[in-house]
Amino acid sequence: MSETGIYVHWPYCSAICPYCDFNVYRARRADNAPLIEAITHDLTEHARRYGRRELVSVFFGGGTPSLLSGAEIENLIAAVQRNYDLATDCEITLESNPEDAALFAEQASAGINRFSIGAQAFNDVDLKALGRLHDADTSLRAVHAAAATGRRVSLDLIYAREGQSVDAWRRELAFAMTLPVEHFSLYQLTIEPGTAFARRVDRDQLHPPGDELSAELYEATQDVCDAAGFAAYEISNHARSREARSRHNAIYWRSDDWIGVGPGAHGRVTQDGARFATEAERRPVDYINSVRATGVGWQSATVLTGEEIADEVLLMGLRIEEGVELHRVETLRGASLNREKLKWLMGQGLVSQENGRICLTRSGRLLSNRIVAELVS
Image 1 (cartoon, rainbow, N blue to C red):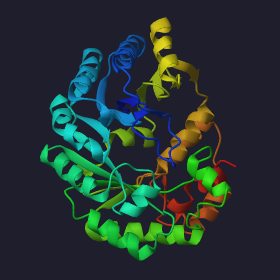
Image 2: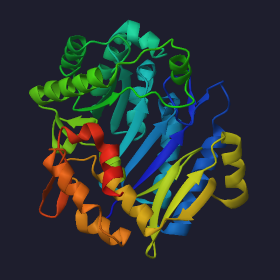
Image 3: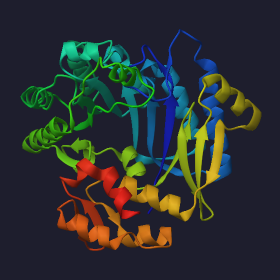
């Protein structure tokens, strides 16, 4: 059965990280009220157009939504509750920077029941290189502050950093797993076009690990997590238990529905047999003006073709341990995947097939995008 979630994008940050390619803007003490008002109206109009739905997840992402006060978050959650029905176990996540830990208690009281803390590293030299404003001690205090609220805690870390050795990463990750955290999102650093890091690479000022070392770091990640009881249920995500897994991200990976509000937010909504892809205006002022003019902040809203839906189902579904149902993908595409390539990939130990589902192996997860390209060729 398809589930629905809401993604709320808060675009402001205290500083822009040099590796980030998200839709973010420097926070300059502007009044938050106009944007919060626009988001609440956008939520109402989405409900009017697509119906009052039950939600299993509400995710505040960014940007840095942990800059919001408890009262501001409470207002946004109230707007969600006016227009949608929250499941009794609805997951309400706040992406949080460690330096905002003083707000965690009031944010939890406002309705947040899961903190996703962007520690990124427990090495002060690397934190500075990543453009982060906090140090390792601040992250430690933030983890304990979040745990003290009694809510779920997830921790983000970045590996494959410049100069990072496999042994150093093993020690850093093993230390992190002693903390009161039940979920980890462990991302390999990628150099995204248009970012400050990309410009440094072009100028030969930044030298991230090559493919071989990156693969070793990935394997080390899996080994340390397995030993600590944090099973990999997705390429970059590890949980101590099934209950600790991210319900919101599961919506993306399983190609369920989510409503995206806030500047630059994307959404996928199914109605009357059609699947709509929405994208909000990126600049906050344009988003606010769009909501005032039309009720929604959309820059575009298009109906996806069966092939486009199938490609998303395959690309996202192969990221998770359960994989994807082959029949579902081929029915949506109206054509078979490349069965010869599938057979070859299975022979190489990169893909497995069982009970009508295809899954990536541990080795295959390193090559997920390339494998998808082969299967649809």
